[in-house]
Length: 320
Image (cartoon, rainbow, N blue to C red; front, side, top):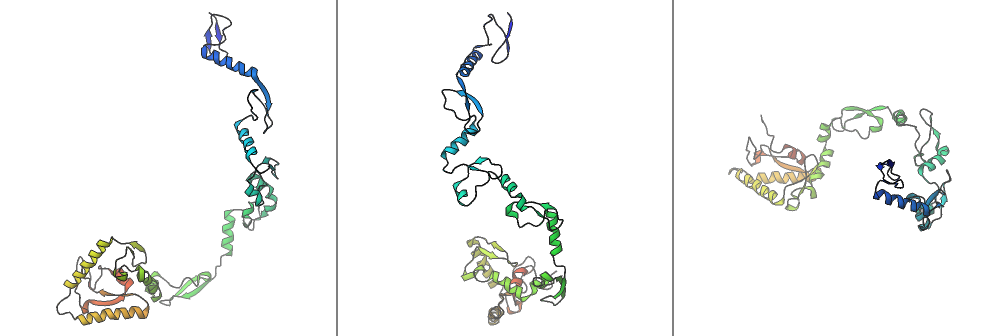
C-alpha cells in the first residue's frame, strides 16, 4: 500500500484507496468541518481598525479580534463622544469627570509629555544642560540629583558663631543657622538643666503618673520619658502591698515619725515651688540584692523624680 500524507495533521499513513485524504476519523471530521466553514465564510471589514477578516456569513461579527470587540462595546456604552489626541491625532475616549475638569486632551502620558516638552525644557542652574520634566515638576531647577546636591552645598551658610552653653556657660562653636537650637554643650548639661528636668517631669505627673488618683495605670513613663506598658492591675496592686509591708518591717522602733512626715511634706512643697516633680528617696535601698536599708529620717532625702527613677535600687553610698 502506498504512503500518503494526512491533509489535516500532516502525518504519513498507508491508504488502501487513493481517495482517502486523512489518517483517521478524527482528522476526517476536522477536515470536513474546516472546508465547510471556509465555503460559508465571507470577507468583512472591522468597524474599529478597518482591517479585512474572514467570518461566517450567519454570524453577526463586526470586529476582527477580541480587543477590537472590547473597544466597540465601550464605544456603544459610553456617553462621552470620541476625542482625538492633540499630539498623535489618535481617537480615544476619556471619562466625563476628566472632561468636565478641563482634561481628556491626550490619549496617554507620553503624548502629554511630548506636547509640553518644548514648554518645559529649560537649562540647569548648575551645569547649564538643557533638560525637560513633566509639568508637575516645573519647580525643579537642576537636571540631576548631583546638581541638586551641589545647589544645597553652595547655598548652605558656612558662617560659625560661638554660643555659650545654657548650663555650664562653656562656649560652643556652631553654625549661625543653628545658634538658636544648640544651647547645651553635651547631654550631661542638658539632663542637669532645671528646664529639661521640668519638661521631663511632666511625663510622670498627672495622668501619666502610675499612681495617679490612687490607682495603678497600665500606661506608665520611664525615667527617660519613654512610655511603656505596665503589668496587669492585680500584679501591680500586689506589688504595692508588698512594698508597703517591706516599709513597715524596715521602720525601727526608735524612728521619729514626725520628722519622716516633715520630709514628705517638704518634698511636696519643693515640687510645687520649683515646678519639678520630686520624690522622697531612700539613700540605702530598702530591698536590694546586696543591701537592706531602714525607713527612718536619716535614710531619706528629697531628689528630683527623674533622678530617683534612674537610681532605682542599684545605687547607694560607698557601694562596691
